[in-house]
Amino acid sequence: MYDVAIIGLGPAGATAARLLDARFKVIAIDRKSGAEGSSRKPCGGLLAPDAQKALSKFNLTLPKDVLVDPQIFAVKTVDTGGNLLRYYPRFYMNLDRHKFDMWLISLIPPHVEIARDAICTDIQKTGDFYKITYIRDCTKYEIEARFVVGADGANSAVRKRLFPKREMPRYLAIQSWFKEKHQTPFYSCVFDAEITDSYCWSISKDGFFILGGAFPKRDGKRRFALLKEKLHRSGFTFGEAVKTEACLVAMPRGIRDFCPGRGGAFLIGEAAGFISPSSLEGISYAMNSAHMLAATLNSESKNPARRYRVKTIPLRIKLTLKHLKAPFMYNRVLRGIVMRLGIKSIKIAEQAQNVGV
Ligand SMILES: Cc1cc2nc3c(=O)[nH]c(=O)nc-3n(C[C@H](O)[C@H](O)[C@H](O)COP(=O)(O)OP(=O)(O)OC[C@H]3O[C@@H](n4cnc5c(N)ncnc54)[C@H](O)[C@@H]3O)c2cc1C
Image (cartoon, rainbow, N blue to C red; front, top):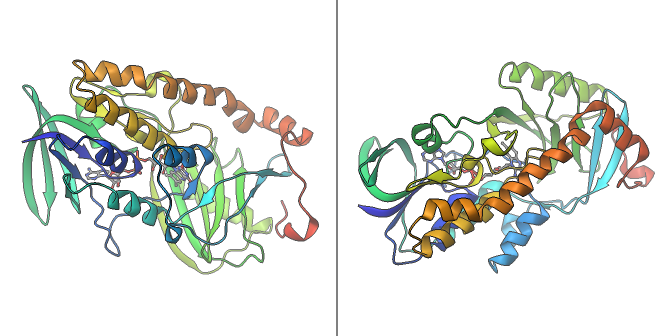
């Protein structure tokens, strides 16, 4: 019997586990073990300024071995349909996402019980409690908890089981890693209406070149292959292929897609739909929503679900406002106007532009 069971130890779950009061008996269940070959989150691993701000709010200092080489300060933006190319300044930190997750887990205090390499398979409400089933080392465990926290990402089992009517739109994210062949490492952001109505990206990281994109679930593989082919034709170079990874990514379309929870069941991070629909930046929302939930539970509120819902209003408004920005990224005509006018873009010296459109 636990007070709180957290399902998932990404940035959301690890932050909640770190911030919950020691008076709670907490268990955190995650399928990652940290061992070579165990589950890893496919991610660009870019820490946006909002996420950096969240770390500063927690007074956390980032160890340097979480960073990768190089740090890049401009994003090359390509609109293939309009044959447009622009550079925009960006102040992301380039990270090893797996090391970042493991570092956040390492900060969880010892009074939290961690079940690693464990897959949560079922959650049921039984009276005032939640019965949680998980499998670890081929053994089935059943536990009960007063509160359950779904921090299990875009494909959240907690959301599916406890809020089956609150399905949210999701895209298929695919990333391939290649040996880096470009002379100058770079980030890129690619818009191509034939490939996706979301966007694609590339990131140079520690000698690898990562190409990724978010695609409608149907036909994702074909679209990804077409992306690679088109970019190859326009000058991107792909070295030896190392690995391909894929997962679902939440694509909230509006306020109705956010689901903070009800009763004693809460959702944080991407499981709740807290991810930017325009840039797919999700780490800051994961950490901030986890902080809001921990503060709610620590306050011993009589109606924690209501309190957490109220606390997340600014976050939900911010994400909804991001929707207003989306047409300027995803509508061909509006994007074309913004890029042609060069709004907020920068000029890059000739020698850095080693890839054309
Ligand atoms: C390809 C891609 C690139 C991205 N790039 C960026 C980026 O550069 N910057 C950025 O800010 N955001 C990025 N995002 C978004 C960001 O990765 C997520 O929004 C963020 O990780 C959400 O954090 P979370 O803790 O809510 O969920 P997650 O990070 O998804 O963590 C969920 C955790 O739950 C565990 N889990 C899931 N199901 C179960 C289960 N049944 N049992 C046990 N454990 C379970 C998983 O192992 C995982 O550890 C990207 C997303 C994708 C898909």
